[in-house]
Image (cartoon, rainbow, N blue to C red; front, side):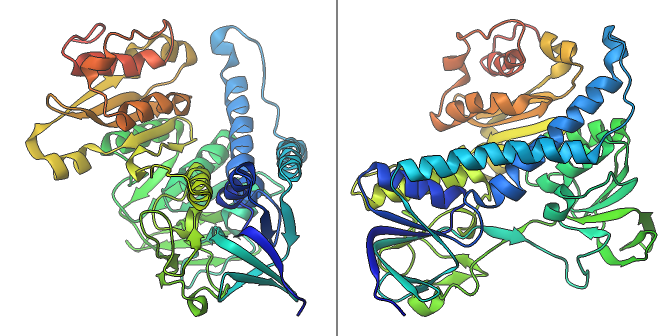
Length: 457
């Protein structure tokens, strides 16, 4: 093993959290080594956020072509070419990847290709090479969870293999009604597949406000997407021709493919963490409220930290840790102020507490308003339905914002500011939203909670 190289900061993992930490640390004058065993950008750029949203955009275009006659445009959807669709998706990923590599190089960050393993005294080994850091940041991300007894392969897909599928499935069963599940259901239905979602809990997107879940379920029923809620998968068998899913009520579903979409697990095994004094809990890294682990000067960010597994949470945590290392005093961002978006058709976006969570904390003083997008002119023009729901305490601040409808993910930042700044609806009511925009729906909800509705009774 060669003698070690010294850096101010050594980062293990070049995904969202890791490269954010590396970029911010370098910006603050630190020498940085960034260790990545695969590709800079990690799951989000190469197998997650970016390629799936490219798929969703292709699906949106397909839907627009189908519906073109309704707005006076003569067009016909004659087919979807998987090869050209893949080229479009891969082209976007390639551009973003090239941009990230250029940014990393411009900041003078040393990129180390290989799998890092933490040892004592803030030392990381990569093969025979040794890298020592004044601080070490662990940012190794997550991987797809599987279901015990269900073998992935062939017609049984994960999200990664579903993205790379070189054909359009004729039918699909999706195991899991979380974000990944509802997004792939949306894509495949837009491509013409028969889709059934199997979810063990009572609603799609069970972590969301129940009003949002019900609105999505209604929209999916109208689209012909089937949901088997409160149902468990008991087994999967496949042949050369199809795959059969056995459910807990004794029924079976036969489909072209099955997608296992039951969430993601932290990637922390084989890194030497526990041997180096970093405590784990069910595979997640234990950290304090400053993201420091149980080992001195070792930090953790992103999906390996319990909580929301979102790329933008990883960005924020990476920046936070880099500033902490540099001696600044960054303010921790509560999970409740991190926006969440499912990029389905329609989209579901939220920030803050659900109504149920708010009532559990604050009791009977919780007040809500739910504005239907049917009253919003721009939503009518776009042909989307949905809701804007705002949760507050009586006479108090806004606690949660929940949106359903096409493109509402672009509105959730306003909700984030309202929740993060503990704004009262009365504070926001004077700020009239541009007309006609979908943002008016959120404005109408603020007006109604302030006791002065404009377009609602």
